Image 1 (cartoon, helix red, strand yellow):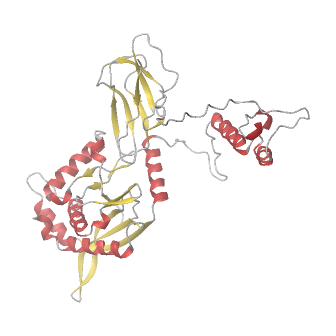
Image 2 (cartoon, rainbow, N blue to C red; image 1 turned 120 degrees about the horizontal axis):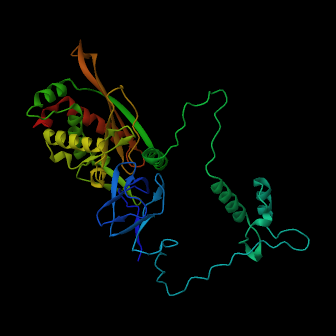
Image 3 (tube, rainbow, N blue to C red; image 1 turned 180 degrees about the horizontal axis):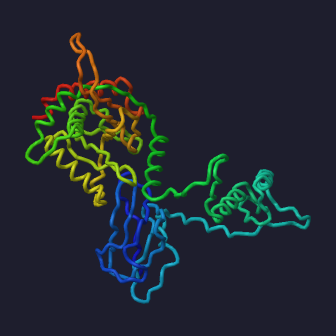
Length: 395
């Protein structure tokens, strides 16, 4: 019996993945546990393994996007035929049998030449340039309705393939054109969903990191380098422990609050941004945070992250040390994200005197559906205190 290989669900918000590369050729015999394809998502690259022994028969091409649980290939026995379609879902358990499917009928054109159709269908067909006599009616009495016209038009568009937009007037011919796909498309879809599903509101605050910089340099020894990002990660965990409203996730129409702080630390790759997660940050020392974030960043750059490495984040930090500040976009589902700019020397007033200090701008984006402005501002102030009085973070 043919064994279907389906697109795995590799994250809480994953809806589809891309078959980036087939590791085995069509018709090749594979063994259970062998890697047959590389799957690309907005977060990770994942090696898809054969679940049984068999002859590989891919049903999608490299670069294809496939919904979670969609069939990407079959494993066949010697001489076995490829199924015509994926297995049907289980029949409903209700005692009342489903109605028989309606047989498709060609549109009826009476002797007078006019097709039986609704006025709205005729008007829409005229607007879209559709021959109403070529449609299959689904309306009452064998009439063509608007839905029939719209479905026919959409099928024609899909069959024609994606339209190639012309170069906007006044621009020269492009040196090259690259279709949006793979991880770039996944990230774009993820960001659009985040903007569409949340009420994003951002706040900024400048903090003095002079003492934190000195202490992290002194603490960097024994092969462990404590970066300012590690100090900020720890400071966020402490602040979130005191203000758990921001350590939350939207799910199933509910707000889920957590005691454990799992912080996603954004890592920039050539293909885009990926966010591995450091779990239970509040219970870890700065040295532990340094080692774990370094290991995760190395795995991300080498394409070796596992699904668990990017799962279960409750808060995210994105560090962009080449700009003063920026407005981060929420990671889907989460209620808050912190954007961190560069640390620069600035003149500031302390005790009536102008002194030079290391200053940094923090930008907090929250989902206003979950977090009010006063709560967000309170978190930033608490975070500022943790960073400007960093002794407790280094214990």
